[in-house]
Structure formats: C-alpha cells, structure tokens
Length: 279
Ligand SMILES: [Zn+2]
Image (cartoon, rainbow, N blue to C red; front, side, top):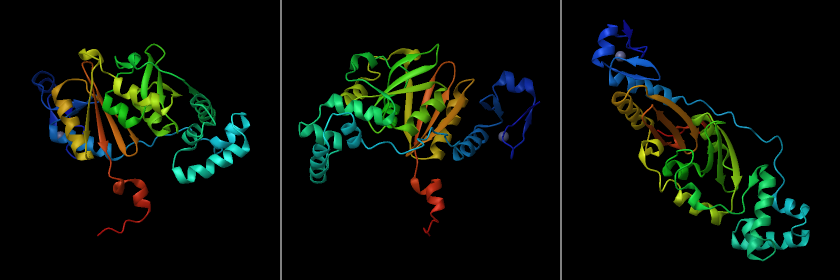
C-alpha cells in the first residue's frame, strides 16, 4: 500500500493502483494522494527554507581606498581628495578615482578583488556565455547578479562573473541548489552588463534550456511545484534563500525549472525579531 506523504492526510491506496493508474503525484520520491496534498506539503517546506551557512569573513576587509594606497596605486593625499569629491558626486570610490584620472579600471578591479579575496578578469568576451554555461535562465542570472562563464560538469565546478561587492548570499544559494562549487571572479561594471545581456542568447533545445518564472509568494510557488510534479515523473525540489528572493529549483530528467519567489520582507525572520506592530 502507498501512503500519502502528507502527515495530516495519511490516505492509503493500493500500490498497483498508484503505479499503473498514475494516481496522485510524487515529489522528491514521496507519493501524495492528490495535487492538493502535494501543494500543501510543498508550501510547508518552502515556508521553512534551510538557512545558508555562508563563509563569513573573520575580520572586516581593508577598505578599498586604504588598500589602493598600500598597493602603491594612489597616494594618501589622492585618497583624501577623492573621498572629499566622492561626498559631492555620490560615486563609488573606485569610480571616483577613475573619474579623477587617479586610478585606472584595472587597478581598481585588482584592489577590489584583493579586498574580497577573489580573482578578477580585466575583460570577458560576451560571446562566451551565449550558450548558457551552467544552465541558468537569464532571469536567475539577473536576480543573482552572477553570470556563469565556464562550467566543468566532471569536477562540478562553475566559474561566475560578478561585480563588487561579491554577492556572497547569491553564491551560497547557487552552490546550495546545484551542489557545485562556485568560483567568483570580479569584472568591472562595464563588462558585467553585456555579459548579462548575452547570457543564454543561443541556448536552444531541452539540454540547455532552463525555464524560470518569478512569482509573488510561497503560495504561488507551491502551486507551480504541484503542477510540475503532476506533469512529469521524478521531480525533485531544492530551495535556497537569497534576499529578496527565494529560489526554488524543480529538476527532473527531462527538464530544469527555476521559480524565483519574491519574498515580502515583512514576513522574514528579521521582521519577526523586530516585533511586528502591524494590526
Ligand atoms: Zn493526501
């Protein structure tokens, strides 16, 4: 006999009926007697996303201005001038230094990479990401602010381009969902946007295509999970949180589907700790 995996339901059905009539639906190898039960269970799971354990920096990183002085790129006096000018312009310090002709893009990038403890690329060819290495959708790439530029399926390693500051939560989420190790490489702001635009442009066929949808809440996401599970066999669900999104990946042999859930910050844990005062 097959028992509905939703604890509150517990409906039993004969194994043969489940196997041959396609009764109910399965998610992560668990059988549910109905779409409603699967959806309710998915909703509970999505409501309690596993917290990511992120590699935290033991000490705050050296500020970029100080770092560039140490690297001999700028002098202490130039830094002082740039900081004063920055207050008026509102530019980031790197951009300010470049605008004043004090430092070049390459110097700033090298400094930012040293600050973050990651590598960097002074140029990237957007053509190289047109076939969607790492099989993400363009929506996911935009939401994560990470562009996969090289993947090694055998070693389960993915190189991604990003801009400073390194989006560590998004890196953690990507690693969590794919099970791969992710190596971030800094690129300049000017190089990043063309990469995002080019990503996945030539991705065709089931092999490469990942569908992504953005939904407003966990209820909508659970409904999509139920639809996917009812529509094809062997669907597995993984989830990771990176504010302001929760990323849900539905994977089966035939297809990978991403659901980006825009999370309402009011319902987040931080809001709970701050003692909600809403009526
Ligand atoms: Zn049930």
